[in-house]
Image (spheres, rainbow, N blue to C red):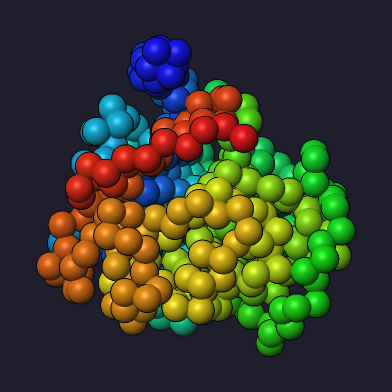
Length: 339
């Protein structure tokens, strides 16, 4: 009888908890690029990257669809992590679908050439006379209702540990540094979003050496709840020295069917000490069943972009640290208590 009453109370409590104002994060499928829509408890919005250019407005349409689902009529802040096609290419299409109030980026593009010039021309034309903010490590993005702290930008990083971080990392030394990366990836804007006890990390496409600098000789970030797999889960990023030190409870991988989702990176994330689940936007063809999550945790199962339905993943978090994740393909949902 006591057990039954306890279960009844727990069931009644769940709707009450999630009737409170939540932080909502939508991981939009842009076929191996990034487009992450964040809606604060106040209703303010930040979109991180915009997916690819053109494809008959595929990515802009998917973002606009998710924005409507989230009841977002304008993007308050559009954060461009870096100037590669799968992140900034969709900006010209997006601004035709939904207004943007403020653009945020790391400053000038360090890459040159025809493609780099085309991407920057399209981006700057879309920005026009709209507010453009340069992200600096240690700075904050003024998204109301949450704290968004910039950790990396333009090849630089925070110099002092975040509150509660700074512990010596015993994993330092197990992952060797690699050749320096001169590309835009290493310039990625990375941030930590905090809502009460809930912490979400997005480092864009930050590459190996820059991630090691966040982890060694001390862990500058501390522990987190949810980790967006860096660089779509490619093996150019994601050293265990950082991922395991972060101790995420849940990881989300923004991979495509044939982009990202490297088997060795998948294993690194999956073996992180505190990890409960790894959610994926796509089944990674190269990984096979052995290095992909179980079907309920994968939003899109198609083996090619043209066969994909564009299902997204939604995360809703409370300031207590409790959160839930929904796969919109199959309506599978899982709740995670605060820790």
